[in-house]
Length: 316
Picture 1 (cartoon, rainbow, N blue to C red):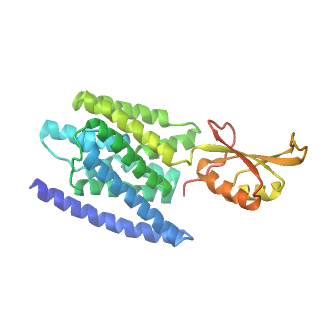
Picture 2: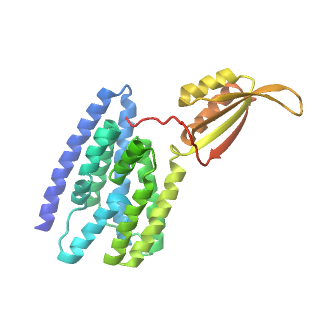
Picture 3: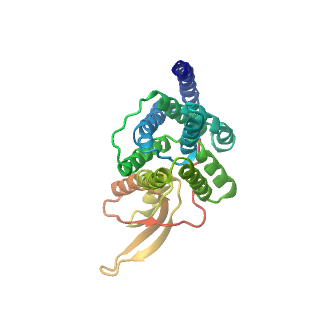
């Protein structure tokens, strides 16, 4: 009976996901100038959801790990109900229920396309987690924590590259940050800590402690793969300062400051441009500068912190 109910529920969710996917593609294509870009975003989000589901049913469940955010909370509720009442609640039901309020927050305050693509990610990861069979690749909890964290960071990065998120606490963190101008990640860290403490009490401290390793590896992997929020300072010595400034302005929408300089060795005068851009943009920008002035001297510095006005692209 339980299998039949789950199968019926899964079929219903699959139909909803299919219809939602068609709606998203039609809506985003009508709103966008680039059909290819929207199709690419859609498949990146679905691929991220698939990776998330596979990760949960291999590394995460094999070691009873708990990822951060509402994914970890959904798994904790699912395991608690099963251990207490021998009732299996589909993972997707819990994940969707927890994301109802964050969905409305994202749609109203963050961005419609951003929220819709995030919902596709939530639907895909929840539904596929119920569909994908569990496979135990290893019984070593440390290996599960490390490789599970790596796969998790790749899945989330795919969503971020597509201009979406994994939903849940991401919506809340972005909303608080944009409203207050302050980082909300300390609150998210506190939420994840509470989940892990509850997991330690209910499931066992081994799983909770290995989950810390999982979340640490995932965070470091995400920082390595996704550079949008990292800042890079460029100091450029050139004789073609106006042309290079136009490239900086057109490609990144950032400003620059120009200084008059003089080389100590040869005594020749040059212009020095100083600008700060997103690390995600710096690679393409450096190539464009070299195309305009192959002899330009570029010093690339990773900026720890920027205080003051810095242009950030809004979520669509």
